[in-house]
Image (tube, rainbow, N blue to C red; front, side, top):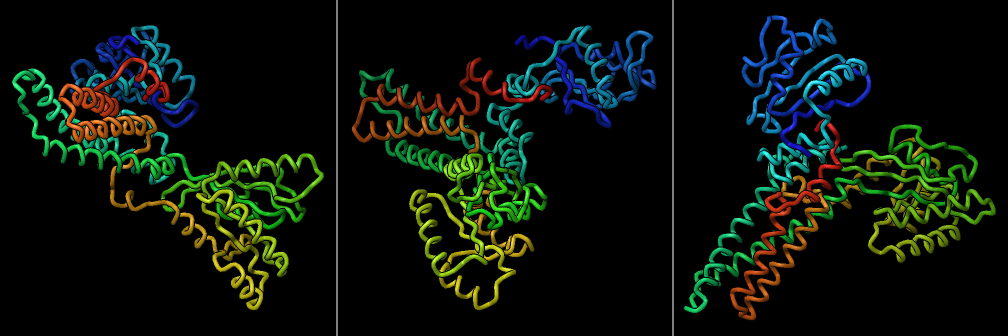
Length: 463
């Protein structure tokens, strides 16, 4: 990329709409915009203050493209740190393309994916973890992922990492200084204080690493497989949870022959429910494929919901179902399995008491009447540790950050081991430098073109 060039891109979603915003960034964009903007008050954009908005027309000679609002942001006090122009025009795709082509023919090039945010990073407007949070914020689909992205974009995670790195860097400089006086055999770094610092850094890193488990869940949603025999109400339950007729419901057993997935937010956490084909012995080839997919989805899910038809429960049937449920729990001991007894609207109190005695941990609901759903939702939320989220603690959601934290922790552990074995300062310094390197990778204090290319390639164009 040539970062001295003027760039342009559509900042709003493509397609027709009420308005569209076209963003330009670069040293010359204010003068370029001034050539193709006729203010209703005859103002020149070059003479206007930063962070002002002006009404007028986008023109090319005598040709008028649209009436628009033009916002002026002068660097370095702008998103990218450069001069920025934002054109708010009518949302016609034709108008959008006409304005884009006008500036592409007059000193601009199309921005690449994430290039506006990349320029913000390169110009010191944000660090790398904050830049990545911009993409997470755009992609957030529930309250929890939005909250984490906002915290990271404001620098909550960055400040923790920078503080750790600065503390380690102070001691590292003293260790390095000892190398210059190795022949005098002097120690500038207080080993007791250094040991306490290493223990503190190790604990903080471990907490951040542990938070990735919930962070990954919040960012990507929790897959929940709804399984059971045919016609027990799996599709009805999915529709009830989604409050939509997402899956076909029929009295005919084996209606669902493929998996159906959709996501809802419960308590700010995304849950992706997967309606599966009913498990049974069948000679139907297509249904058999669906049942095979059911077992694949059980492997992929983090939570399994086993649905039972209460109207079909004899003592023998209950016994065989308990065996089936035990098989699933034994095969996936780390995977929560919620047993649900459905169609309780068709049960009398005596029958319900009998089933409760046999399945004391089961939830009772009626998917058809949408009763008991709230208890199921609370049960699902109970599998997610939302305490850290409620307490506004730093939660790691980025796999790149997670990998760097693991490597930094490994180096810190090496330093502690080296100190316990009284290794010389030059060997300690090697591991300290590595730890500093991995912490610096998170915030972008240590970076390379390949890393930046991989990160910003995932952004949308115009951001």
